[in-house]
Image 1 (cartoon, helix red, strand yellow):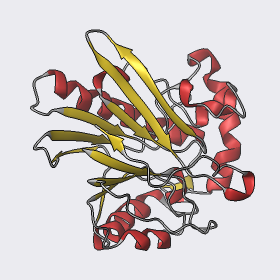
Image 2 (image 1 turned 90 degrees about the horizontal axis):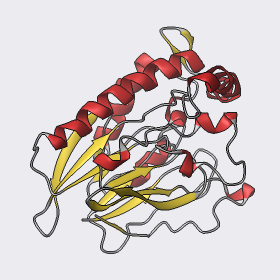
Image 3 (image 1 turned 60 degrees about the horizontal axis):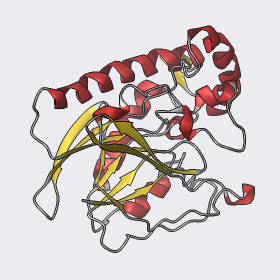
Image 4 (image 1 turned 45 degrees about the vertical axis):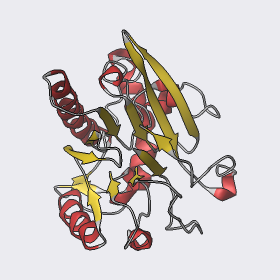
Length: 259
């Protein structure tokens, strides 16, 4: 299956007009498309099926409990399939069954281990204040994000484990907004406490997939993770980022990813 991947378009402030990639069989939106949601209307009537996971900015200034059902209704009306802790199987043009396992997978702040968690959560305070979201009327702060992240992690580990139980599919693709490895950290900033707000330590889960697609980092990545006795797993981020910060250099919105 040939996939087109877009994320971190930030259409609430950026001027970008997405186009279908020639030859693509599906479009993956890996979050942070538009904090206002209005930019999602550009994907209405898209010629290929569209799968999406929400990014953190889809919740900016919103109450969590209200945002989820509203976003589901909004995307469904546009023909976009929003997935959160959900899996689906799609058949490609060659008749292969591809399993997609998807969740936002928020930061659990354990990227550098439990001893560094408090420091990472303090660094996350800045990002949470910018997000200005609430849950149950309380600030959606680093502690609330970690709680949600652990639920995502538990679900993801279980869903990927189903493949080992013989679920019939030809390939498995994970879709998350947050990155699964420190290898996806932005090279401009290196490995610092703030990196744990963007990347998780899901290295043990990567061998369970053939392809892991993510966003959140405003840079591009395409690397492989060795798996014993099998072809390497591939991890890809094709985030656009912000033009005024020079983050769009090297971004190819029409790139095709084969699985």
